[in-house]
Image (cartoon, rainbow, N blue to C red; front, side, top):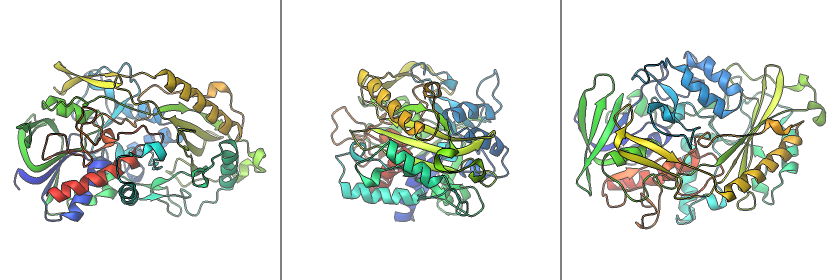
Amino acid sequence: MTENFDLVIVGTGPNGAAIAQQVHAQVPEASVLVIEAGREVTDVAGAHLVEADESALTASYDDLMRRARQIEYVKGAASMTALDDDGWTPDDTGIFPAAFLGHNFAEFPGASIAWNIGGMGVHWTAATPWPYAEEIPDFLPREEWDADQETARRLLRTSVGPLVLDMENAFTEPLLAALRDAVPSPDPTRQADYMPMGGVARQGKPFGRTGPRDIAPFVFDGSARNVWLRSGLLVTRLEHDGRRVTGLATRDLVSGEESRWEGRVVLIAADALRTPQLLWASGIRPAALGVRLNEHATVDGEVEIDETRFGLTKADIPVPPRGEPFIGSFWSPSIGAARPAHGQLMQREFEGRHKLSVGWYCATEIRPQNRVVFSDDAVDELGMPHMTVHFSYSDDDLAEIERTREVQRAAARAIGDFPDDERTIQPPGASLHYTGTVRMGVNDDGMSVVDTDGRVWGFENLFLAGNGVIPTALTCNATLAGVTLSVRIARAVAAQL
Protein backbone atom coordinates (compact mmCIF):
# COMPACT_ATOMS: atom_id res chain seq x y z
CA MET A 1 0.00 0.00 0.00
CA THR A 2 1.26 3.45 -0.90
CA GLU A 3 0.84 6.80 0.84
CA ASN A 4 -0.07 8.38 -2.50
CA PHE A 5 -3.71 8.25 -3.62
CA ASP A 6 -5.90 9.59 -6.35
CA LEU A 7 -8.39 10.91 -3.77
CA VAL A 8 -8.12 11.53 -0.05
CA ILE A 9 -11.40 12.10 1.83
CA VAL A 10 -11.40 13.43 5.39
CA GLY A 11 -14.55 12.41 7.27
CA THR A 12 -16.76 9.30 7.28
CA GLY A 13 -20.18 10.88 7.90
CA PRO A 14 -23.01 10.79 5.35
CA ASN A 15 -21.33 13.34 3.09
CA GLY A 16 -17.90 11.72 3.11
CA ALA A 17 -19.55 8.35 2.45
CA ALA A 18 -21.67 9.80 -0.38
CA ILE A 19 -18.60 11.32 -2.04
CA ALA A 20 -16.75 8.00 -1.76
CA GLN A 21 -19.67 6.05 -3.21
CA GLN A 22 -20.25 8.38 -6.12
CA VAL A 23 -16.59 8.76 -7.07
CA HIS A 24 -15.96 5.02 -6.79
CA ALA A 25 -18.97 4.36 -9.04
CA GLN A 26 -17.80 6.87 -11.65
CA VAL A 27 -14.05 6.19 -11.47
CA PRO A 28 -13.76 2.65 -10.08
CA GLU A 29 -10.04 2.44 -10.80
CA ALA A 30 -9.22 5.47 -8.61
CA SER A 31 -7.36 4.79 -5.37
CA VAL A 32 -9.18 6.34 -2.41
CA LEU A 33 -8.06 6.90 1.17
CA VAL A 34 -10.70 7.86 3.75
CA ILE A 35 -9.35 9.35 7.00
CA GLU A 36 -11.36 9.52 10.23
CA ALA A 37 -10.23 10.93 13.58
CA GLY A 38 -12.72 8.88 15.59
CA ARG A 39 -12.98 5.14 16.10
CA GLU A 40 -15.74 2.53 16.07
CA VAL A 41 -18.67 3.34 18.33
CA THR A 42 -20.02 -0.21 17.85
CA ASP A 43 -18.66 -3.51 16.52
CA VAL A 44 -20.08 -2.68 13.08
CA ALA A 45 -18.23 0.40 11.86
CA GLY A 46 -20.45 2.94 10.11
CA ALA A 47 -23.76 1.26 11.00
CA HIS A 48 -26.54 3.23 12.67
CA LEU A 49 -26.82 2.59 16.40
CA VAL A 50 -30.36 1.25 16.06
CA GLU A 51 -28.94 -1.48 13.82
CA ALA A 52 -26.17 -2.44 16.24
CA ASP A 53 -28.25 -4.87 18.29
CA GLU A 54 -25.29 -6.23 20.24
CA SER A 55 -23.94 -2.81 21.13
CA ALA A 56 -23.97 -1.70 24.74
CA LEU A 57 -25.16 1.65 23.41
CA THR A 58 -28.43 0.32 22.01
CA ALA A 59 -30.32 0.50 25.29
CA SER A 60 -29.06 4.01 25.96
CA TYR A 61 -29.97 5.13 22.46
CA ASP A 62 -33.42 3.56 22.72
CA ASP A 63 -34.10 5.25 26.04
CA LEU A 64 -32.96 8.65 24.86
CA MET A 65 -34.73 8.51 21.52
CA ARG A 66 -37.99 7.47 23.17
CA ARG A 67 -38.05 10.92 24.69
CA ALA A 68 -38.34 12.13 21.09
CA ARG A 69 -36.32 15.23 21.88
CA GLN A 70 -33.04 15.43 20.04
CA ILE A 71 -31.55 17.85 22.54
CA GLU A 72 -31.98 15.32 25.35
CA TYR A 73 -30.33 12.69 23.20
CA VAL A 74 -27.39 14.98 22.49
CA LYS A 75 -26.93 15.85 26.14
CA GLY A 76 -27.22 12.22 27.17
CA ALA A 77 -25.01 10.87 24.42
CA ALA A 78 -21.92 12.49 25.89
CA SER A 79 -22.47 10.49 29.08
CA MET A 80 -22.43 7.22 27.16
CA THR A 81 -18.63 7.24 27.23
CA ALA A 82 -16.27 7.13 30.15
CA LEU A 83 -15.69 10.84 30.49
CA ASP A 84 -13.94 11.94 33.64
CA ASP A 85 -12.14 14.91 35.14
CA ASP A 86 -9.06 14.13 33.07
CA GLY A 87 -10.90 15.25 29.93
CA TRP A 88 -10.92 13.74 26.48
CA THR A 89 -9.00 10.55 25.66
CA PRO A 90 -8.56 8.81 22.29
CA ASP A 91 -10.76 5.96 23.54
CA ASP A 92 -13.80 8.23 23.89
CA THR A 93 -16.42 7.87 21.17
CA GLY A 94 -19.91 9.23 20.61
CA ILE A 95 -21.31 12.74 20.73
CA PHE A 96 -19.74 15.50 22.77
CA PRO A 97 -20.60 19.11 23.47
CA ALA A 98 -18.70 21.20 20.93
CA ALA A 99 -17.08 23.12 23.79
CA PHE A 100 -15.73 19.91 25.33
CA LEU A 101 -12.26 20.30 23.81
CA GLY A 102 -11.91 23.77 25.30
CA HIS A 103 -13.65 25.97 22.76
CA ASN A 104 -15.84 28.96 23.59
CA PHE A 105 -19.40 28.14 22.55
CA ALA A 106 -21.13 30.33 25.15
CA GLU A 107 -23.25 31.95 22.41
CA PHE A 108 -23.93 28.59 20.69
CA PRO A 109 -24.28 26.34 23.75
CA GLY A 110 -26.39 23.58 22.22
CA ALA A 111 -23.74 22.63 19.67
CA SER A 112 -22.37 19.09 19.66
CA ILE A 113 -19.91 17.13 17.54
CA ALA A 114 -19.61 13.44 16.71
CA TRP A 115 -16.36 11.67 17.48
CA ASN A 116 -16.59 8.24 15.87
CA ILE A 117 -16.49 6.40 12.58
CA GLY A 118 -19.60 7.41 10.65
CA GLY A 119 -19.92 10.81 12.34
CA MET A 120 -23.45 11.96 13.05
CA GLY A 121 -24.62 9.41 10.50
CA VAL A 122 -24.65 6.67 13.14
CA HIS A 123 -26.65 8.79 15.59
CA TRP A 124 -29.14 10.79 13.50
CA THR A 125 -32.92 10.53 13.72
CA ALA A 126 -32.85 9.79 9.95
CA ALA A 127 -35.36 12.49 8.92
CA THR A 128 -34.78 13.45 5.27
CA PRO A 129 -37.34 16.11 4.29
CA TRP A 130 -36.42 18.09 1.20
CA PRO A 131 -35.75 21.82 0.82
CA TYR A 132 -38.36 24.06 -0.77
CA ALA A 133 -38.52 27.47 -2.40
CA GLU A 134 -35.87 29.80 -0.91
CA GLU A 135 -34.10 26.83 0.68
CA ILE A 136 -32.86 25.67 -2.74
CA PRO A 137 -29.83 27.61 -4.04
CA ASP A 138 -31.16 29.76 -6.88
CA PHE A 139 -27.79 29.86 -8.67
CA LEU A 140 -27.85 26.12 -9.44
CA PRO A 141 -29.76 24.82 -12.47
CA ARG A 142 -33.02 23.49 -11.06
CA GLU A 143 -32.99 20.37 -13.22
CA GLU A 144 -29.54 19.49 -11.90
CA TRP A 145 -30.62 20.09 -8.31
CA ASP A 146 -33.70 17.88 -8.74
CA ALA A 147 -31.68 15.07 -10.32
CA ASP A 148 -28.98 15.26 -7.65
CA GLN A 149 -31.61 15.31 -4.91
CA GLU A 150 -33.10 12.09 -6.29
CA THR A 151 -29.65 10.52 -6.21
CA ALA A 152 -29.19 11.74 -2.63
CA ARG A 153 -32.57 10.27 -1.68
CA ARG A 154 -31.45 6.94 -3.14
CA LEU A 155 -28.13 7.03 -1.29
CA LEU A 156 -29.89 7.81 1.98
CA ARG A 157 -32.59 5.23 1.18
CA THR A 158 -35.32 7.79 1.79
CA SER A 159 -38.78 6.29 2.22
CA VAL A 160 -42.15 7.86 2.91
CA GLY A 161 -44.61 5.76 4.85
CA PRO A 162 -45.07 3.77 8.08
CA LEU A 163 -41.98 2.98 10.11
CA VAL A 164 -42.99 -0.69 10.47
CA LEU A 165 -44.70 -2.33 7.51
CA ASP A 166 -47.08 -4.66 9.32
CA MET A 167 -47.96 -2.38 12.26
CA GLU A 168 -51.45 -0.93 11.92
CA ASN A 169 -51.64 2.60 13.32
CA ALA A 170 -55.24 3.78 13.63
CA PHE A 171 -53.99 7.24 14.64
CA THR A 172 -52.15 8.05 11.42
CA GLU A 173 -54.98 9.46 9.32
CA PRO A 174 -56.79 11.24 12.19
CA LEU A 175 -53.53 12.90 13.30
CA LEU A 176 -52.65 13.96 9.76
CA ALA A 177 -56.16 15.30 9.15
CA ALA A 178 -55.99 17.35 12.35
CA LEU A 179 -52.56 18.71 11.43
CA ARG A 180 -53.63 19.60 7.89
CA ASP A 181 -56.59 21.50 9.24
CA ALA A 182 -54.60 23.31 11.94
CA VAL A 183 -51.60 24.12 9.72
CA PRO A 184 -53.09 24.51 6.22
CA SER A 185 -51.10 24.73 3.01
CA PRO A 186 -52.11 26.18 -0.36
CA ASP A 187 -49.84 23.60 -2.01
CA PRO A 188 -51.33 20.09 -1.83
CA THR A 189 -47.83 18.63 -1.99
CA ARG A 190 -46.82 20.58 1.12
CA GLN A 191 -49.45 19.35 3.58
CA ALA A 192 -48.83 17.29 6.70
CA ASP A 193 -47.85 13.76 5.79
CA TYR A 194 -45.43 11.02 6.72
CA MET A 195 -41.94 12.29 7.50
CA PRO A 196 -39.49 11.18 4.81
CA MET A 197 -37.01 8.95 6.61
CA GLY A 198 -33.64 7.61 5.55
CA GLY A 199 -33.93 3.87 5.87
CA VAL A 200 -35.98 0.78 5.19
CA ALA A 201 -39.34 -0.14 6.71
CA ARG A 202 -39.50 -3.84 7.61
CA GLN A 203 -42.06 -6.27 8.90
CA GLY A 204 -41.90 -6.88 12.63
CA LYS A 205 -38.58 -5.06 13.00
CA PRO A 206 -37.49 -1.52 13.86
CA PHE A 207 -37.15 0.89 10.98
CA GLY A 208 -33.73 0.18 9.45
CA ARG A 209 -32.13 3.61 9.68
CA THR A 210 -29.46 4.44 7.14
CA GLY A 211 -25.92 4.79 8.38
CA PRO A 212 -22.85 5.71 6.32
CA ARG A 213 -22.14 1.98 5.97
CA ASP A 214 -25.37 1.67 3.97
CA ILE A 215 -24.29 4.50 1.67
CA ALA A 216 -20.80 3.18 0.90
CA PRO A 217 -20.37 -0.28 2.44
CA PHE A 218 -16.98 -0.85 0.79
CA VAL A 219 -15.47 2.02 2.80
CA PHE A 220 -16.24 0.25 6.07
CA ASP A 221 -15.97 -3.45 5.23
CA GLY A 222 -12.80 -3.31 3.12
CA SER A 223 -14.43 -5.01 0.15
CA ALA A 224 -13.00 -2.64 -2.49
CA ARG A 225 -9.39 -3.43 -3.32
CA ASN A 226 -8.41 0.22 -3.91
CA VAL A 227 -10.32 1.96 -1.08
CA TRP A 228 -8.82 2.20 2.41
CA LEU A 229 -10.16 3.55 5.71
CA ARG A 230 -7.77 4.80 8.37
CA SER A 231 -9.31 5.73 11.71
CA GLY A 232 -7.88 7.36 14.80
CA LEU A 233 -5.92 9.79 12.61
CA LEU A 234 -6.34 13.52 13.15
CA VAL A 235 -5.54 15.63 10.09
CA THR A 236 -3.59 18.50 11.63
CA ARG A 237 -2.87 20.53 8.49
CA LEU A 238 -3.05 20.58 4.74
CA GLU A 239 0.28 21.27 3.06
CA HIS A 240 -0.07 23.46 -0.02
CA ASP A 241 1.66 25.90 -2.33
CA GLY A 242 -1.23 28.35 -2.49
CA ARG A 243 -2.90 26.65 -5.44
CA ARG A 244 -2.64 22.93 -4.82
CA VAL A 245 -2.74 20.76 -1.72
CA THR A 246 0.51 18.80 -1.80
CA GLY A 247 0.03 16.67 1.31
CA LEU A 248 -1.95 15.99 4.48
CA ALA A 249 -0.23 15.78 7.85
CA THR A 250 -1.85 13.44 10.38
CA ARG A 251 -1.25 12.38 13.98
CA ASP A 252 -2.25 9.05 15.42
CA LEU A 253 -4.29 9.97 18.48
CA VAL A 254 -3.13 6.92 20.45
CA SER A 255 0.54 6.55 19.55
CA GLY A 256 1.22 10.16 18.61
CA GLU A 257 2.92 8.97 15.41
CA GLU A 258 2.87 11.58 12.65
CA SER A 259 2.35 10.63 9.02
CA ARG A 260 2.04 12.31 5.67
CA TRP A 261 -0.36 11.40 2.86
CA GLU A 262 -0.71 12.66 -0.68
CA GLY A 263 -3.72 12.85 -2.96
CA ARG A 264 -4.19 14.12 -6.48
CA VAL A 265 -7.49 15.46 -5.17
CA VAL A 266 -8.33 16.19 -1.52
CA LEU A 267 -11.85 16.51 -0.15
CA ILE A 268 -12.65 17.62 3.40
CA ALA A 269 -16.01 16.56 4.85
CA ALA A 270 -15.31 16.88 8.58
CA ASP A 271 -18.33 18.95 9.66
CA ALA A 272 -19.45 22.59 9.62
CA LEU A 273 -17.14 23.40 12.54
CA ARG A 274 -14.03 21.29 12.04
CA THR A 275 -13.76 21.70 8.27
CA PRO A 276 -13.14 25.46 8.52
CA GLN A 277 -10.95 24.83 11.58
CA LEU A 278 -8.67 22.59 9.50
CA LEU A 279 -8.46 25.15 6.70
CA TRP A 280 -7.56 27.88 9.18
CA ALA A 281 -4.89 25.66 10.75
CA SER A 282 -3.47 25.16 7.25
CA GLY A 283 -3.24 28.87 6.45
CA ILE A 284 -6.12 28.64 3.97
CA ARG A 285 -8.19 31.59 5.12
CA PRO A 286 -10.66 33.03 2.60
CA ALA A 287 -12.66 35.99 3.90
CA ALA A 288 -15.85 33.92 4.21
CA LEU A 289 -14.29 31.10 6.24
CA GLY A 290 -16.43 30.45 9.30
CA VAL A 291 -18.61 33.47 8.47
CA ARG A 292 -22.41 33.36 8.09
CA LEU A 293 -22.91 30.43 10.40
CA ASN A 294 -26.58 29.62 10.15
CA GLU A 295 -28.99 27.33 11.98
CA HIS A 296 -32.73 27.14 12.08
CA ALA A 297 -34.20 27.98 15.48
CA THR A 298 -35.70 25.02 17.35
CA VAL A 299 -39.01 25.23 19.21
CA ASP A 300 -39.48 22.01 21.13
CA GLY A 301 -42.58 20.56 22.73
CA GLU A 302 -44.79 17.54 23.35
CA VAL A 303 -48.54 17.09 23.52
CA GLU A 304 -50.37 14.16 25.06
CA ILE A 305 -52.66 12.70 22.40
CA ASP A 306 -56.35 12.88 23.32
CA GLU A 307 -57.60 9.60 21.87
CA THR A 308 -61.24 10.51 22.41
CA ARG A 309 -60.99 13.40 19.94
CA PHE A 310 -60.40 10.84 17.21
CA GLY A 311 -62.94 8.26 18.36
CA LEU A 312 -60.18 5.98 19.57
CA THR A 313 -59.00 4.58 22.90
CA LYS A 314 -55.69 3.63 24.44
CA ALA A 315 -56.40 0.09 23.34
CA ASP A 316 -55.88 1.33 19.76
CA ILE A 317 -52.29 2.42 20.42
CA PRO A 318 -50.01 0.03 18.51
CA VAL A 319 -46.92 -1.44 20.09
CA PRO A 320 -43.81 -1.10 17.90
CA PRO A 321 -41.27 -3.93 17.79
CA ARG A 322 -38.55 -3.97 20.41
CA GLY A 323 -35.87 -1.44 19.57
CA GLU A 324 -38.12 0.92 17.59
CA PRO A 325 -38.60 4.10 19.63
CA PHE A 326 -41.45 5.57 17.59
CA ILE A 327 -44.95 4.55 16.55
CA GLY A 328 -45.15 7.09 13.73
CA SER A 329 -43.10 9.88 12.18
CA PHE A 330 -44.85 12.85 10.56
CA TRP A 331 -43.96 16.09 8.80
CA SER A 332 -45.57 19.51 8.54
CA PRO A 333 -43.64 21.13 5.64
CA SER A 334 -42.79 24.78 5.28
CA ILE A 335 -44.47 26.71 2.48
CA GLY A 336 -41.76 29.23 1.71
CA ALA A 337 -41.74 32.87 2.79
CA ALA A 338 -45.39 32.70 3.91
CA ARG A 339 -44.45 30.16 6.58
CA PRO A 340 -40.72 29.40 6.77
CA ALA A 341 -41.25 26.80 9.48
CA HIS A 342 -41.17 23.01 9.39
CA GLY A 343 -42.61 20.57 11.91
CA GLN A 344 -41.15 17.20 12.89
CA LEU A 345 -43.76 15.21 14.77
CA MET A 346 -42.96 11.86 16.36
CA GLN A 347 -45.64 9.63 17.87
CA ARG A 348 -44.60 7.40 20.74
CA GLU A 349 -45.72 5.86 24.00
CA PHE A 350 -43.38 6.26 26.92
CA GLU A 351 -43.89 5.60 30.61
CA GLY A 352 -47.58 4.97 30.02
CA ARG A 353 -48.22 8.24 28.18
CA HIS A 354 -49.21 8.50 24.52
CA LYS A 355 -47.53 11.58 23.08
CA LEU A 356 -46.74 13.46 19.92
CA SER A 357 -43.58 15.51 19.93
CA VAL A 358 -44.24 18.80 18.16
CA GLY A 359 -40.81 20.13 17.31
CA TRP A 360 -40.64 23.04 14.89
CA TYR A 361 -37.71 24.56 13.03
CA CYS A 362 -37.88 28.05 11.57
CA ALA A 363 -35.43 29.75 9.24
CA THR A 364 -33.17 32.49 10.59
CA GLU A 365 -31.40 35.28 8.77
CA ILE A 366 -27.99 34.64 7.23
CA ARG A 367 -25.81 37.29 8.87
CA PRO A 368 -22.02 37.80 8.80
CA GLN A 369 -21.91 38.53 12.53
CA ASN A 370 -22.90 34.91 13.18
CA ARG A 371 -19.53 33.27 12.76
CA VAL A 372 -16.77 31.02 14.04
CA VAL A 373 -13.59 32.88 14.99
CA PHE A 374 -10.31 30.95 15.05
CA SER A 375 -7.33 31.85 17.20
CA ASP A 376 -3.76 32.18 15.93
CA ASP A 377 -2.42 31.54 19.42
CA ALA A 378 -4.76 29.45 21.58
CA VAL A 379 -5.34 25.79 20.74
CA ASP A 380 -7.79 23.14 21.87
CA GLU A 381 -6.93 19.86 23.60
CA LEU A 382 -5.90 18.38 20.27
CA GLY A 383 -3.58 21.24 19.35
CA MET A 384 -5.98 22.64 16.75
CA PRO A 385 -7.00 26.33 16.59
CA HIS A 386 -9.29 27.40 19.40
CA MET A 387 -12.79 28.31 18.24
CA THR A 388 -15.10 31.04 19.54
CA VAL A 389 -18.62 31.16 18.15
CA HIS A 390 -20.52 34.43 17.91
CA PHE A 391 -24.23 33.82 17.38
CA SER A 392 -27.41 35.73 18.10
CA TYR A 393 -30.93 36.11 16.75
CA SER A 394 -31.92 39.27 14.93
CA ASP A 395 -35.16 41.09 15.69
CA ASP A 396 -36.66 39.47 12.58
CA ASP A 397 -35.51 36.07 13.83
CA LEU A 398 -37.19 36.62 17.19
CA ALA A 399 -40.41 37.66 15.46
CA GLU A 400 -40.26 34.54 13.26
CA ILE A 401 -39.71 32.35 16.31
CA GLU A 402 -42.85 33.81 17.88
CA ARG A 403 -44.85 33.14 14.70
CA THR A 404 -43.52 29.60 14.72
CA ARG A 405 -44.62 29.17 18.33
CA GLU A 406 -48.13 30.08 17.23
CA VAL A 407 -48.00 27.49 14.46
CA GLN A 408 -46.81 24.92 16.96
CA ARG A 409 -49.57 25.85 19.40
CA ALA A 410 -52.25 25.49 16.73
CA ALA A 411 -50.98 22.08 15.71
CA ALA A 412 -50.58 20.78 19.25
CA ARG A 413 -53.99 21.98 20.42
CA ALA A 414 -55.59 20.09 17.55
CA ILE A 415 -54.15 16.92 19.11
CA GLY A 416 -54.68 17.46 22.84
CA ASP A 417 -54.21 19.85 25.74
CA PHE A 418 -51.05 21.90 25.30
CA PRO A 419 -50.12 24.29 28.12
CA ASP A 420 -47.78 27.10 27.15
CA ASP A 421 -45.13 25.81 29.55
CA GLU A 422 -44.79 22.70 27.39
CA ARG A 423 -43.00 24.78 24.74
CA THR A 424 -39.26 25.34 24.83
CA ILE A 425 -37.01 27.39 22.58
CA GLN A 426 -33.87 25.31 22.51
CA PRO A 427 -30.48 27.02 22.86
CA PRO A 428 -28.66 27.90 19.63
CA GLY A 429 -26.78 24.91 18.29
CA ALA A 430 -29.30 22.38 19.57
CA SER A 431 -30.62 21.42 16.13
CA LEU A 432 -27.19 20.08 15.04
CA HIS A 433 -28.01 21.41 11.56
CA TYR A 434 -25.26 24.01 11.13
CA THR A 435 -24.70 25.49 7.68
CA GLY A 436 -22.82 28.23 5.87
CA THR A 437 -19.36 28.13 7.43
CA VAL A 438 -17.73 27.07 4.12
CA ARG A 439 -20.61 28.13 1.92
CA MET A 440 -20.96 27.69 -1.81
CA GLY A 441 -21.20 30.65 -4.17
CA VAL A 442 -20.99 31.74 -7.77
CA ASN A 443 -18.23 34.34 -7.51
CA ASP A 444 -15.00 34.66 -5.56
CA ASP A 445 -16.22 37.86 -3.94
CA GLY A 446 -15.50 37.20 -0.29
CA MET A 447 -19.02 35.89 0.32
CA SER A 448 -18.29 32.20 -0.21
CA VAL A 449 -15.52 29.65 0.33
CA VAL A 450 -16.17 27.21 -2.52
CA ASP A 451 -17.46 27.45 -6.07
CA THR A 452 -20.51 25.64 -7.42
CA ASP A 453 -18.46 22.43 -7.74
CA GLY A 454 -17.34 22.56 -4.11
CA ARG A 455 -13.78 23.57 -5.05
CA VAL A 456 -12.10 26.06 -2.70
CA TRP A 457 -11.59 29.36 -4.46
CA GLY A 458 -8.04 29.68 -5.76
CA PHE A 459 -7.24 25.97 -5.40
CA GLU A 460 -7.10 23.37 -8.14
CA ASN A 461 -7.49 20.17 -6.14
CA LEU A 462 -9.11 21.04 -2.80
CA PHE A 463 -12.83 20.37 -2.42
CA LEU A 464 -15.18 20.67 0.56
CA ALA A 465 -18.46 18.90 1.28
CA GLY A 466 -20.96 18.68 4.11
CA ASN A 467 -23.64 20.86 5.64
CA GLY A 468 -21.21 23.77 5.98
CA VAL A 469 -21.29 24.16 2.19
CA ILE A 470 -25.06 24.84 2.16
CA PRO A 471 -25.52 28.53 1.30
CA THR A 472 -29.22 28.95 2.12
CA ALA A 473 -31.25 29.26 5.31
CA LEU A 474 -33.06 25.97 5.84
CA THR A 475 -36.27 25.16 7.63
CA CYS A 476 -35.87 21.41 7.07
CA ASN A 477 -33.28 19.02 8.45
CA ALA A 478 -29.98 19.58 6.68
CA THR A 479 -28.85 16.05 5.79
CA LEU A 480 -30.61 15.62 2.45
CA ALA A 481 -29.64 19.12 1.31
CA GLY A 482 -26.01 18.49 2.23
CA VAL A 483 -25.89 15.12 0.46
CA THR A 484 -27.58 16.64 -2.61
CA LEU A 485 -24.68 19.08 -2.88
CA SER A 486 -22.25 16.24 -2.23
CA VAL A 487 -23.61 14.39 -5.26
CA ARG A 488 -22.83 17.47 -7.34
CA ILE A 489 -19.38 17.87 -5.78
CA ALA A 490 -18.57 14.19 -6.32
CA ARG A 491 -19.30 14.59 -10.00
CA ALA A 492 -16.74 17.39 -10.22
CA VAL A 493 -14.18 15.36 -8.24
CA ALA A 494 -14.71 12.34 -10.51
CA ALA A 495 -14.32 14.51 -13.61
CA GLN A 496 -11.02 15.87 -12.31
CA LEU A 497 -9.77 12.35 -11.59
